Amino acid sequence: MKQKSIRIRKQPHTACNQCPIRKLALFQGIPPERLEWTQKYRDQQFVVPAKTLLYHEESVTDYVYTLFDGWMAMHQTSREGKRQILRFALPGDFIGFQTDQKGMVSHSVSALTESIVCGFPRSRLQEMLEENPTLALRLASMGSKDMNLCQQHQAFRSRKDAYESIAFLLLELFHRTREHLNRNYDPETNSVVFPPTQEDIGDAVGLTNVHVNRILRQFRNLGLIECHHKRLYILDEEKLADMGEFDKSMVC
Image 1 (cartoon, helix red, strand yellow):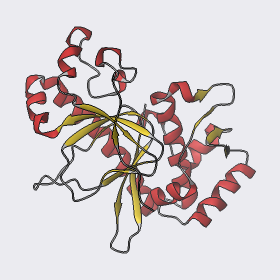
Image 2 (cartoon, one colour; image 1 turned 135 degrees about the vertical axis):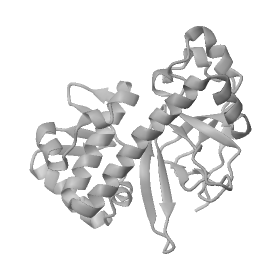
Image 3 (cartoon, helix red, strand yellow; image 1 turned 30 degrees about the horizontal axis):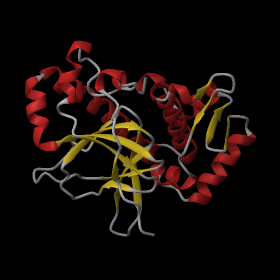
């Protein structure tokens, strides 16, 4: 299936000093009076249709990006064509800056939902960090947090069973969504918007759709979760967290 085209978002773009996700993004610590400084480095906002690649692995990208709105997945593809999701990206995440010595990205990024990204020219990234060294510290902190989550998932693949891996993933995404997309959290039902499909979950934990479906069904039968109409309902967080050895301090 031919993917839809990425397009430049029509003006006016959201101004940096009015950005609703700034507290989650790279520019979190920039004082309000200096936000016009960050604006000069942002080139465009782009709209990425659902199921569309923002960039693909082993390519050289012209931009680095802040995810402004939507859900994306960072993934690699094996020689056999199997997709392995490394991480789900949510608003505020800074993506595309990890490259090898040749300047190529090691992973692909695709949109799970229609998404908006803020593009910063890669050619000006070093200048931006040198002009404001606190951004380099913030970038290192964000990278460390992302690395810790990736290491947790890799560890689960070697020492945890499928139930534990999925329990951890569901709670990770639940709490990250509450933090990044609070408007999509319903406290009355303890639920969040949840666009990942069973295929996405399977590609994140290394399981088939059939296996994921069976585990989610058992979680529902145990009264742990409900998942329908693109919403995830956590019914017994304590038991689910115990099963997945999940601590929300890992993501919040």
